[in-house]
Image (cartoon, rainbow, N blue to C red; front, side):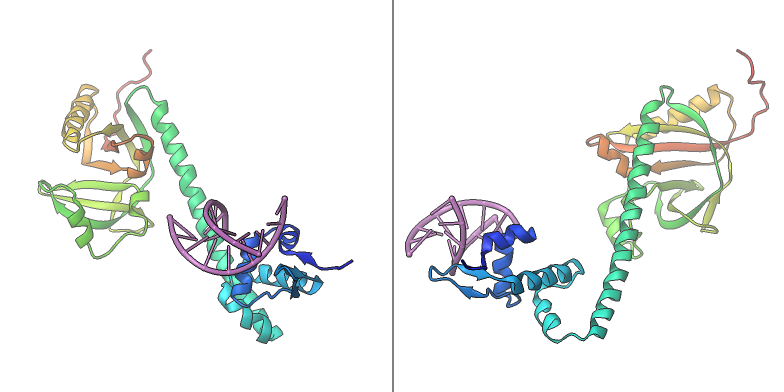
Length: 261
DNA sequence: CTTCTGACA
DNA sequence: TGTCAGGA
């Protein structure tokens, strides 16, 4: 009996597809031990070891194209460098995944937080927040694609961040993203009146803002500083065609007696 | 039933 | 990389 195996047996043994084995052959990295009379490829133990090496190199990120010269001419030292390099790549990937993981949990938390409140208005304690200026525009102007495209400095994951719209004075609105201290601008810690809304049209926002101020007045909250509009476009994932906004404004530490039931 | 080549998405 | 055709 012959000790060689067919391509499908090799594939099953090594947990790869038959196609992939032929592909390796096409690229000259894994030749069969011989061809049977019926043109079937036959593989022996040598090929098994060889394929194991190829698969290992693939896992290390070596493209199939370069595996040939790798296996034929690499010194132990060069393999050391290769291993070191892929270790660095893996660490980068790990970091990327951890950031993604953080983002996902953040979205989940914010989504839960948003859904859970029956009263649309809340008072939130906010620690000092540092903001990085990213774009300034006139109050009249609405944010459009052209404006974004023309902006030279791009924020890495702009639409995964909380974009703060703050009106300074009456004619300009500045867009900020959160950052580490010191930043270009900071929001003081304190109690903020907050409301979160989903809006269809950007124009609806004006009404929400009006309502916000009337509510504050009705509750005798004295608003300090500018209105802060936070856009979380990533939360719109849960609601087709609507944008998620949060309005916040610092309120004066009221001394009203709140312990009445 | 298995594999082969070649083409294609 | 998977899948399909058409032949051996």
